[in-house]
Length: 451
Image 1 (cartoon, rainbow, N blue to C red):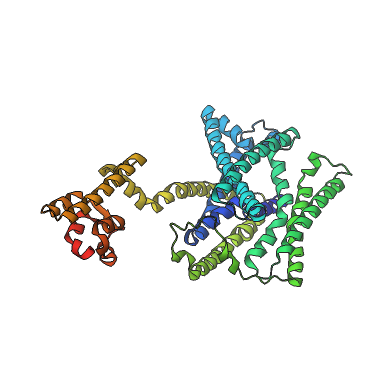
Image 2: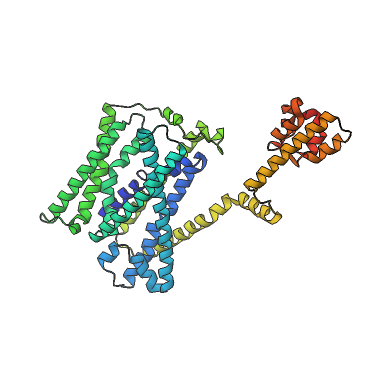
């Protein structure tokens, strides 16, 4: 039960205090973010559920010689895979771990660099920073962060702290920020100062309680092993998450901030580039609808996973063969459904774009023009415009013929204006333009209306 509570606290900690999740959620559109995150959470549950059921129990059933230290360092999956499939199993696990580590590591590096460049450098050191300045700071922070994490990993390994130990300790360090962050998002009276006080005070108290419980459980002995026991970790995790909630609530009630979230719309962009955005994304009704949806289904699934599922499993006690078979069946089906969602859903959602690329590839799409070709076409267009002026001034009898030859296949507004002179009719051009351009035939047929 203690491990269940610790894991529950840790799962509550992952998203709220992980800047990479915040960046992804803010960058995504409201129409896709709320459903995507809920679906992603269900799919992610495959990792602790299906892998733990299959590989964890397989190591016990096969009686593999895995020590507690090796298990704590996360070596159970590769040991089982290697035993069952030889080098192929080891290769598959290595690829899976490499993809997970690279994906997570890159996301965290970008998240930390964004915090340092936008929220620290731009906010306190250079408020007029340009995009180039932000990029330089981000690049330096990424290098420094990756070197620091590499050194920290080496230090933790030499101290004998395995992945399991660090994993359980994580809730003590970051759990104190969970409830204050939740309050800041969902409660208008939540105090920003109170959130800071609650996080730091609760973290300090959690570390103290963690050490005291470890000493009390082991006759005053405080070591890496005693600190890694379940009850000290449980006490520290509970102190971090519960005390922070109490402190922040009391402070917010006595010093309410009454925040209305309107300033969120006034966030200044470094470069006011809103390409790809439309007014539908700012529709408050859609945001309210997304909020109601996630509140309904998010809280519903939380009740199912945290309350209903454990409550139905506790009366069973030690699983009999039938109940255990049912458990294994659910875990296997969960894994297959998650794989189907990961593979099929992106293809389904992007099918129209995929077909556009395929059709364009099969029919042949002109290669992108390089700078030299663009300059040549610009010079040719200028020369053509000059030729048009000369022809017009000389009233050449072959004016129409020459004019037809110098008109490009697609005429944009700037070219039409040059070739039409002062008589250019912008409204007439816009009436027949498609994507800001008209064809040569349309221009010649309607040149008297355009000009």
